[in-house]
Image (cartoon, rainbow, N blue to C red; front, top):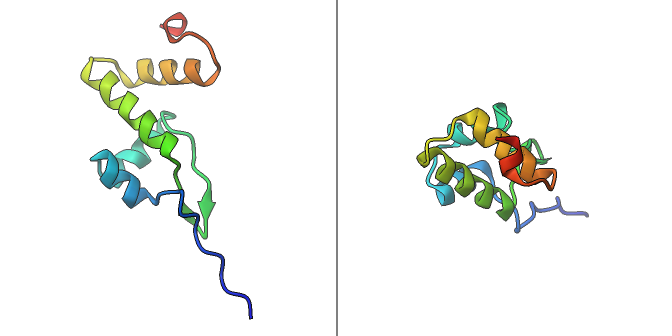
Amino acid sequence: MKSRPSLNDETLTIGQLAKRAGLNPSAIRFYEAHGLLPEPPRIGGQRRYGEDTLARLAVIDVAKRAGFTLDDIRALLNANDAGQPAHQQL
């Protein structure tokens, strides 16, 4: 008899991610909907996040506190994802 595969211990649920980032899960969904976070893979219908998402949320937090708009933050993150200097997008 095969057992059901367990969720990867190296990934976080949205609740775990939210708790570690000091956010509500709705904020994470908001960031996904507005293109600041990539859509995460799902296991059994449940969003699963890596440690890299925590770092991305920290960048979003710093940028928000510095007065950047969501559009500015998206441009910075997209430039970084593309391997370009972020200032070129601004």
